[in-house]
Image 1 (spheres, rainbow, N blue to C red):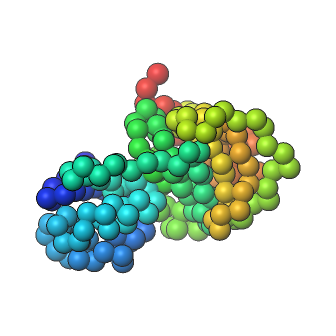
Image 2 (cartoon, helix red, strand yellow):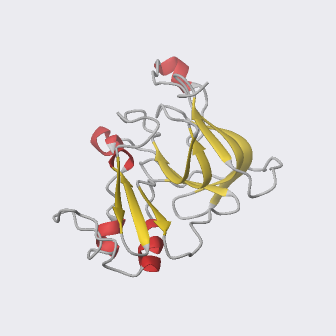
Length: 214
């Protein structure tokens, strides 16, 4: 469920189902975001631009905003970025459509254990998932579409995340791994070629729902 908190210059939306408790909000703007307070969001407690800038660092996209002061809304990067987190999920940023839903940011499960697939729910911590965030780069890059196109992300039934559209895959520290327009990312946690799928989901008997829309 999405809750909305409306201030004079900005409206803040919070989707608890996508939150991975990175705590960026509380650590950076505690006067606005305080889990001990009710309501926990105070949209007028800081300038709208400070709040918007902080929300743009929310990796899961659980926080989003709408400006009410005439300032331009969040602009996605020209090419979507997929950041591989050490022992953790895939963090997407761009003009995304995740299972048909538009969003600028999303943190998606790659350990195979999330109860909220395709989204991460921090199960990788409980399960002791281990996978490097610094995989070796691809030797060559395939040609890509023009930057600025939207990126479609669809979980395939009992299989990987299918990503169509121009994106760049980077390590947790920002080094480029690959660039492409049609990629398949492991979400069973078993691939020997992480973050990409190598078909291990079939051998492992991985089971997870496919796309919500046909």
